[in-house]
Every structure is written in structure tokens, then in C-alpha cells.
Length: 478
Image (cartoon, rainbow, N blue to C red; front, side, top):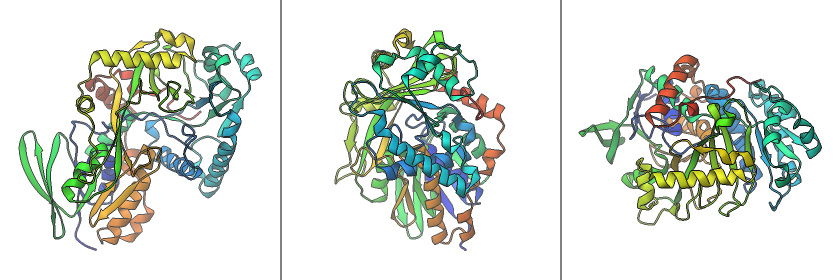
């Protein structure tokens, strides 16, 4: 064993903060650099992708990996989870039918059952036989007459507000209910920030910009600026967890790669008439990049809804996807995206795109057209390793010695990423081999719900978002 390693982690998003917590608990000397004044400020996320049911175009292999990683994520970050299901609806004019989705759902059900047999603790998405449920129109019409339930406990009770509000003539049957839960990014940031502050082996350096990185014989020299004060530190190992800015660190380190960066935004609305109604998430499939792109209706307390519309007028941007070049590993986004990433949104654009999102979902939920703009969007730029924009599963790569490049596309990949980095540190002699069997984020278990709740709402307020977005509808699995 070598002396205790000094590890630099650049970027305090899901990848960086999860890695800092895990390695800090293993006793390594961690410095976590974050450009913003809080962690978890990257691209928005709102659900598990437990099986990739939102992405009919990705492979079965990616779907199975997403399912496994989502189960791990629920096990280790239960305080982030909103335990409500997701409903998948295929529009009448959509090219595929619900029947086309059944083989994949069956595959995922069997895989989930197998994972439970291996470890009973994997049963975090309900019973495997209930992983998905089909609803034909006749059954839905009967549910339509049922009174709303304040705290849904059964799948039928979750479906009542769906059938009472969507236009059944606009969708194919059956509708599909899947046990894919919601994730709350404000609660994730709150919990990780609180846990890291309690961990003496981790130094959290926010509002810090990395200026230069120099390769040394046995590590790295990092030059940074914090509150206009310059600083130089030496580290044994470097972890690049900077998300869409990953290429800038690659350039400093002197490694090249192919990658893409895509700017995306989701929009925040409020439907005041439904302040006390608990909805599941509702997904309307559609062809990406067309006027009929997928619509996503994600509920929060207080009648707030996070909206995605996979069209160029809503979530996507015609010029929002850029590639790296032979001269730089960092894809170049146009200046108006960089302005947005620096919190400089124009109110006119916020209103226009949010109203377009409301209109897009209103095609299927007519009364939702009464909803209003609630705040600025949740936004960010997502890195995609390689040249395939449909890639949904990636973890980490090691392009040079003592350097890990985090490449997660979905937040649930973070734990597999941590395992791979830990293995590399064992190979280098900084950790004993027995730690490979450890993946226990003990400091999260010590957190108090009251502290997480308060800190999450405080974070939302500081970032100028409604506090409802920092809460979840269902705290415990029913």
C-alpha cells in the first residue's frame, strides 16, 4: 500500500459528488472543485430511466444496463426518489403500437425477477410481476367514473387522474403503467452536500475555477482561482467530472477524444387547478426532432409540472448539438447557449418555450392548456461520449495514467462509474483489494429527513426555482 492518496475531483455534479463521498469514506484525501456555489447544478434529470422505456430506439443491452443501474441508484439514494409510477402512451398517429413495446417490457420483467433472486434488496421497484401493467380503453372508461384519491396506493388509483384528464381519442391502447420512479435533483444536491460537509476527508471547494493542469512524474499540479485568489496544489490522481466541460480538462491534460455536447432544457409550469392532485409521470411517445416529438409530463407538489417536448421549439435546439474537433476535445456551443448556461436567459424565450411546452402537452391533456409559466427552465448541456447521439449508457474511461474521465449520460450510471474508478485506484496501490466489495455510502444513512428537506428548499430558492420542485409527492413506496 502506498501512502494515503490525494485525489482531485473537478466537478461537483452527480458524478463528482458521488465519487467524492465514496472515496472519502474509504479514507482517501479528497478535494472536490466546483465552479458554482453549490453541487448538482448540471443538466436536469427527473426520473430513473429504469429500463429505458422512454427510448424505443436504444438496444436491449442498454435497457438492461439502465435497469440494473436504476435499481442500484434507488438502493443507495432513496431520499432522492419520488415513489410514483410512469404511464406510457403512444399517440394514435405514432408509427409504433403498444404491442411493439411488450417484448422489451417482458425482457425487463424477467431481468428484474432475476436480479431479485440474486439479492432480495434489489426489489426496489415493487414486485417483479407488477413491473408493468396494461390498461385497455374499457377498463379506463370504468376508472373515469371513480372519485380521485388523495394518496394513491394502487395502480388503478394512480390511473384515475390520467384517464380523467387525457383525451382518450388521441392515444392508442393499451396504456402502459411502468414502475419507473421520479428523481429529485434538489434533494440529491441537498443530501450529498450535507453528507460531504460531515466527512473530514473531503474538502469541498466551491466557486473555484480550474486555470491550468500540469502533468508531473507521479501525479498532477492544479492551478485554480477561488474568489480571485490563485492557488496551486499537487495531487496523486485526477478525476474529471466536469460534465459538458469535460473536454476543457482533457485539453489541459493533453488527451484527445471524440464526444458531443447537447444543450437541453425542461420547462416549469403550474396548473393551479391541480395543486392537490397526485399524478403519475405521463410520457407521450413521438419522433425526436419533429413537431410530434415525445412529450413528458412530470409532476411535483403544488401543481408544478416539469415539461419536456423533444422538438426544436421546446427541449431541443436546432443548433444545440456540437462535436469535438481534431484540435480540441471540447465541443464548442454557440454563444447564446453559453449565455444561458451562465444564467442569462431572456424572459421572452422562457415564456415562448414554456408556453410551447404547455401547448405540446395540451394536445393530449386539453385542460392543461390553462397552465402558466412558473419559473425559468431547468437546463444544462449534456456530454455524450463518442459520435452516437442515442447513447444512453456510459460510465468512465481512463485515457492516461492516474486520470479518470467520467462520462455518465444518465445519473443512475454514477455507481458503476465509482466502482471502475475504485478498481483503478486498487491497481495503482492506493486502496486495498477488499474495498472492491464495499459500496456503502454510510454518511447518507446518517442524514435526517428534516435537514434534507430544508436544505433542498433553500437551494431551490437560491437558484430562483419554486420550492415545490424540491419536494416529492410520495416519500415511501406504497
